[in-house]
Length: 448
Image (cartoon, rainbow, N blue to C red; front, side):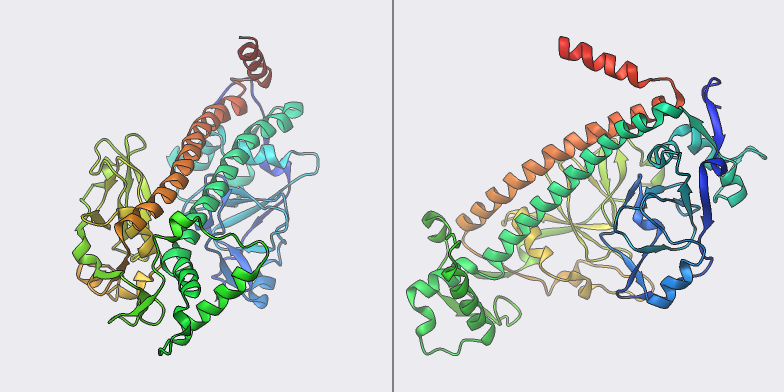
């Protein structure tokens, strides 16, 4: 297996600790101590955007064998098998189920070991039982300890540094994109949920001085804006943008819309089902989904690729089957959508505006089904949207699209970097490519 000239060392000889997790289900709580779950560990990264927790007793019972610390490696034993992540600085956590904690020896580069475990050289050992020559569904501790890890000794820190630099750039791009997306959502909330520009115009026009039965929520928004406008660093919107917003509120027939039923004067309300075409995605057998082609969206994001696409333009999706039912997604252009999602096809209102409207609503409350949650087209009948003038919608969409264009550029860069990492990883770990070869190639490019 691998390069015959590669020197290897057993994993057990590289670690001071190889600790199996407790074979019990944690006592789940809404907050407390973070429990690492296999679903948090993907492609060498630890994603705690949706963390799980246990209480102090649960935490203490799960750290009896070892307390996870920065630099430790967590490896999943099954479901999925062989995923790894590094414990970052400052994270207090415990292992969940079907996981193993690896603590490299002090004279071993833990970062290199982290990358070596992701290489084809080691992945082959993870997925196959050497004794029987068959695939396995889980990793037994004795087998894990016997894994042979390729060694490059003095070069290991440099190999790890090179690969980690690529990973860190991808992570940075992801964080920047999250910030840009948050900026778009913040702008939408300010304009179309809190109605900040409308409140500003109404304050200037003396609207709130009238003897009307304003709800407390609207009066509270007005008082909040007064205080914001009095701050020294307050920057009003450009006059051309402010003029797109009215200077008054009207009471509407939908008390759940606006601020206790008060909406900007002149804005309309309409059911989602009347301003968009809502259809189910198409059935696509799993056997036809692969890693090449156009992105395929299932019930909770991209699940693979397919040779054909259903939509040329980005679409708004609502997950319609399973635990993710009611979750809203925005697709990439040229995509295929399976029947685990509803597509909100654009008809008379811009799809991007509808997307941000739906993000503000908790659609999970509209799901049905006892054994398995589902979202039907009929379930969406109660969903109403607030519709300002088309010029204002277009202005917001231009801002949001500018942010999305920025995000797409970083996504493209990250895809390129991911391909580079996936090309370099097996070659560096196997010895097919040496770091001095990379440096020589870079020097030639700089000279050219």
